[in-house]
Image 1 (cartoon, helix red, strand yellow):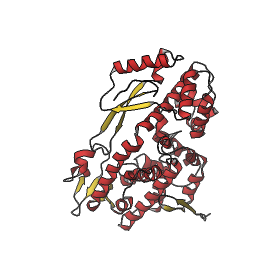
Image 2: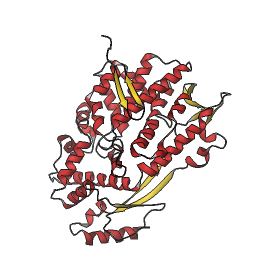
Image 3: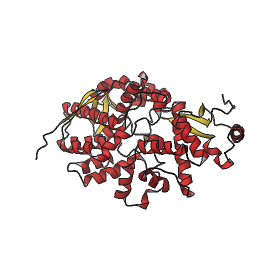
Image 4: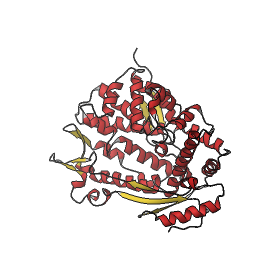
Length: 413
């Protein structure tokens, strides 16, 4: 039977997004995809930017919309893309983030036995192939880079993909941080394909530079904001403590799905379909509900951390270009033992800890952004004369941090 339904979604960033394909509509309606409504795009960034409460569902629809615009521009330039390929690449971009667990990147690898969200997205696509008619196998091959037309994969995953374009625009919109706004419409209109590789026409080079610079600014102003980092590392410590207690045989109440992943750190204990079914039951609500329960837990470490996060009594996090010396860490730990009598020495890593934060706005060693001149000369953007990317933005930034309760008196800076 022909597909007679279409869906119009009113998106605050782009306006109307149109869904008019049966397979795409089925995927969006699937419970595994609807689950993304319950996973926040920016984890705990809302504790700093109150408007940052948008979800993975919104982001994936936004990426789908930008991909639809990109495909239309490429077709207008005479690039042949079959109807099946169009549907397949749209499915690939819709599902590229479907494997995210609770709180997105903040708990990635911690909940699901070390698996990345890309690996879990792949498992989900393999399962959906069995349930939904349509070019999902082609979508999986595009996602996996095994489909022969490489530019389709680059639209989904590269240093200039629709995923990055949408999260910069969307995260900027919801946080109110204007530095993330990019000229996505001009970039999309300047996309082209040469020798099966995605490229950008040379006249869009300044838009590309702004895109890369915007990404760098958003990382240090939003994604790696020190208070956001503090909240997310505290969340990680809570999950690690809960898992430690479960391993000792201590009762740690939670939903059945979360209980399963607290008890096991490896996904190979169950067949993929059953493991995946349990993972698909997890979302932010499971973790928040557990944290509320753990506020009254008999373990004082778990209870204290849970109450602190729930009530936004966050640790102080101090960033530095150099690692924290061990003498400073030791002094803070000594203060911690005096301040919190319930702590034992083995508990100190939950209250005083160090780590690193790093970002790479543009990596010349990765899937490069290629610029196509009017003479059909192809260059990496970092090789273009007088390019900002060559001189500044391609240099990675790494910072070191120490995190500890604000009630301690030690000042690091």
